[in-house]
Length: 363
Image (cartoon, rainbow, N blue to C red; front, side, top):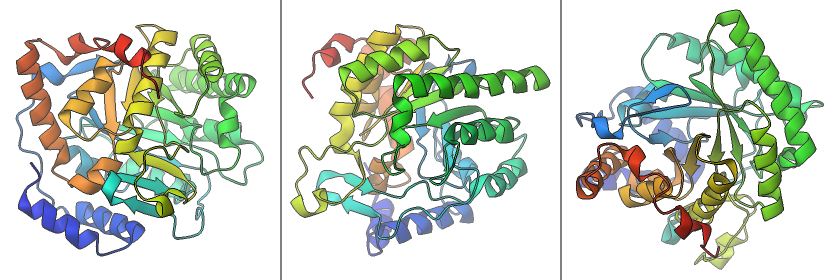
């Protein structure tokens, strides 16, 4: 359960608008005053995915630490890995404010931030300062809104952060940069992956180190769209998928006024849709390609459900807005209890155990 201190902190943050509160939470993590997770690591939660050893399957999704300010503070909360960004080559302000909206009754968030970040240079300086520290930190890369060559922007991200990233995520699925999701189309995606993976191969040859590359896709895909993505992904040397980004759907929301706000919806209402898409992509790409499941993870049970639907790892962000910084530790405790119940030696054994259930889900 969320402790009383966390509840008081949340109430204090909720006195501010959502974006101001987000900034204050970053400052709190930077201050070093947030209590670190004191849980003893559970070896049953550790696994190797895409050549990386993850101490547990729980990650902080991109979008929280947009400028790579607090990756180590996030890891100290209990996350097995943290993903920074989305980072674009040039700084950009993003879309006009207000652009983040809390839907408290639904434990959800709508945002139309638009890749607001300080650009490659600022993030490179911060990540360079932590070079050599333990912990897995992924770098989520994207394209500037006004870029004349968006594929070139992704290549720049690979080259710039190659010495510093534990893995990369090519984010082509945000709904808040006009035209970005067009990169999910078959020919465009093939061109993007060819360029990004060629840059990775060159950097690998230069450094002798292979950095995994994941592709983050949207939950609002047609069956044909999923077919196309799977075909292109399997034709390239990609290391995995992240399923999924925010949705444009507003199904099931309780506040009709807030539901009209433009942007991507994340949080609890996204769980079923994103998990069904995860299962459908697992079916298409087969058992070997790693998948990180994202969308609506709010408890140990929902985290394990993502894994049972086909995910190797999971990420969260929006639900932590409501549950506070103690959420990662609470989820890890819960996962350990669930493994006790299931009597398995490693959480990997439960992957795909409910794949057919989610393949049949009507969402």
